[in-house]
Each structure stands twice: as C-alpha cells, then as structure tokens.
Amino acid sequence: MAKTKSVWKVLPHRPLQKLSENLWHLEGDLEGMPLKRVMTVARRGDGGLVLHNCIALADHEMAQLEAQGPIRYLVVPNGYHRLDISVFKDRYPQAKVLCPRGARDKVAEVVAVDGTYEDFPPDDAVTLTTLEGTAAREGVMLVRSADGATAVFNDVLFNMPHLGGMQGFVLKHVTQSSGGLRISRISRLFLIKDRKALAEHLCRLADTPQLRRIIVAHHEIYTGDAGAALRGVAATLG
Image (cartoon, rainbow, N blue to C red; front, side, top):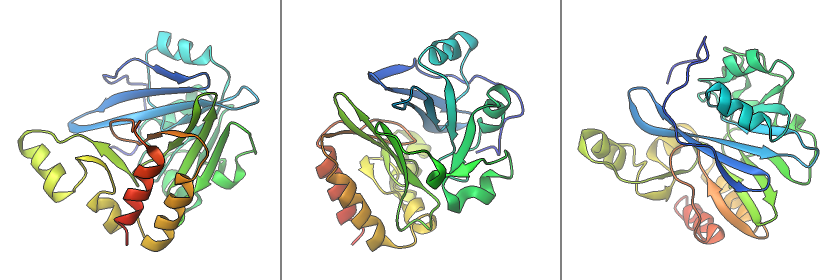
C-alpha cells in the first residue's frame, strides 16, 4: 500500500451504509489489489464523529458524513493504514489523529500524531483499546448502539471470501487471508507477538454484552454469533 496520498483522490467504493443510529460502514477498493478496505464511522455520546481507517469520498458524500456530526477524531488503526490520513488531516485540521502507541512512529512518518488510544477521552458509546499480544501496534474500537455492540478490528482479523485466479490462490493458500473470519498467516508472522495474550483478550471481548457484529479492515462484516466467532478465532492461537 502507498505511504499516503498527497491529494484528495476518490477511488471506487460502495455507498456509506448506516448500521445503527451511531454507526456507519463503507467498503472501498485499493488500486492494483484485490483487497477491499473498510472505513467505520462512529458517533460518540458527545456527538463527535470518530473515523476509523479514513477513506476519501466525493464532496457530496463527505457532506452526508459531516451531517451526522463534527469530525473530531481520525483513527489510524496501524502503521500501514495511512493511505488517506494526510489529506484528511489537511481537510479537517481541527480533528485529532490517534493511533495505537506501538504504531506511532510509523504513522508519524506521514502525519502529525496527536495521541494514542490511551488519549481518547472516555465515552459511553465509543472506546478505543490496545489489543494485548500485538506489541501495542493494533487495537479495537468498541461501539455501543441501541441494537447492541460492535467490535471494530483492523488487520488482526480478516473476514474475506475466497477469490478466483492466481491472486485468490495466494490469498487462500499463501497468506491464508480468505475463507471467513480468521487470523491470517501475515498477522501471525508479523503482527502477533504473544498469542496467549491476544487469545485471552479476544475471549474477554467475546463476553461483551449484546455483541452484535464484528467489523474488520478488509472485506465483510461478521454478523453471526460474534462472541462464539471470537472464541473460535482465539482457539486457533493455542
């Protein structure tokens, strides 16, 4: 993935989807890659919007987003999801850029970082927590809505269908990224530093009251039994 864009460039994407009264989801394309990327937007109890993994949209779409509340936080969920963060900070200079503390140096290569997940003000609707076992390089955003809770991950979890062709073969057999909710081989090799610690954290997240859905950074929302799914993924780390 490119380090960051220097201009506001809108790539193909699907419409902004409202999931609950304070939660929105959008899936977009990446140039030259079969991966889809995901932006999640959550509204805090104080009305401010949190943009997790920013994706540049057309002006009328950004106006639609802005109508939901003031954009106050731009979350860069790891050191590699930086593609649109620079142009977002240019467009919304009042918004604070936050990232996991273990990713701060990498994110700071392309944009000034205002703080880490620990600096996110307490809120009843939206929380940011560093994931144990990842050397503080990734975290999870938990959003509480009227219809239940949503856990928003980044690259720790994939939920990608199998694809055809050579790229699909690589994703299925080499990176082991496709085929439902899972931890990819890339994450196991380069992101996870303590499997036991991460497994225990995932199990605690699985116990979140009324956990309704899991959102990941690439491809599909998981809407089955989210708690059981997280426990199943945790079991693969043993």
